[in-house]
Length: 274
Image 1 (cartoon, rainbow, N blue to C red):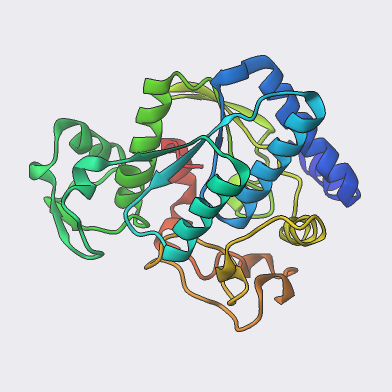
Image 2: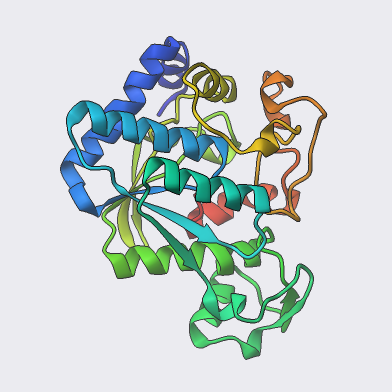
């Protein structure tokens, strides 16, 4: 998407943006049926995508797709409780992908992971991330941890389940590495289509839709967290609720996230990260 196209879509009214997102989702669901899934982290953007998917399904008479989440080993208890609540209230068919080999060790953040003690599959993922040392501290937000705990289990699940298309909640204004992305983007490892229905939503739009439509959200946002990642890798940036903060300061949205991963976003996306 070129700059002019992005600016035109950003200029749409909120109702037009909602309709555009639903159209992207309805098109993909109509083509891929049960092989279309929705990725959900429990954060504000992916919860909005879930809501839009439910709305589009109701309007088109389509069944609700299945939902994929990832246990990276360092989640906020509040996020897990929110996801459990929404599974009950919205009747979601939720599957959790995870690197169970690493999680079976019950690692704490900072625990040493020796590469030669990992399986061949996990060692290959470490190598794909460009890591060449003998070991590393456990941290799902580091580049090697992100590959091992998020990207690898997600890709393994997509391959095993035969997922043809996966909806994610990235936005153009969220990070420079996501600017210019298209609504539909093919991936090769494994082969599937990424569907991005809220690319044209700004952070303020997400909160405008969420609050005006009564969409549930994790209470951490009310406490001042603006963007949610892992528990250890995310800090609260303000005492104000997220939607009352200066949302025109785009650089601040992910300021509370682990900056090593933020700086490596282009590389992470090339490896399969959302």
